[in-house]
Length: 164
Ligand code: FES
Ligand code: FES
Image 1 (tube, rainbow, N blue to C red):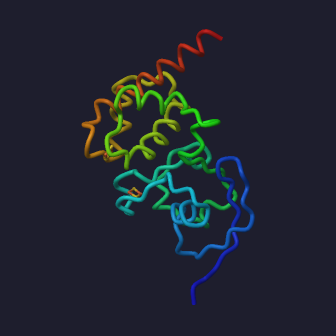
Image 2 (cartoon, rainbow, N blue to C red; image 1 turned 90 degrees about the vertical axis):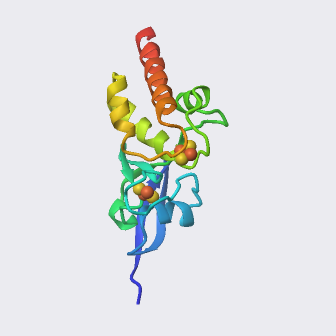
């Protein structure tokens, strides 16, 4: 018989105390199928492609490699949390402006990877950003435009910080 567990997760600022999951369910299963947050994509299910990247207590993680029960009590942010009141955030706007997406399947993973990284490394160099994006697979953009987008967003955030 499949073991059922009652878990609590805080997702995009909302606490869910009543999640009944199977012990085999991954975090991405629960985000997509229990909570309807289908912005997080599933590619390889082996921790290789990064399409399923979300933030777990602020750090980018592959949600296909984590059992939902392991995330018990933690804060999760998905791509749905980036836009506010229907307006794309600065990182999403940079991806659009620099043509950092084509088919877009990998884009939520890149956005969450970059969002978590820039929170830690606002001074990131282009070389560091290139190293960062090597963690995720995108088959259509050649990466150059993704690097341009993240670099532009980082520069914009630094400029705002200096103006304060
Ligand atoms: S679906 Fe999780 S790394 Fe590919
Ligand atoms: S935009 Fe197509 S795989 Fe990344």
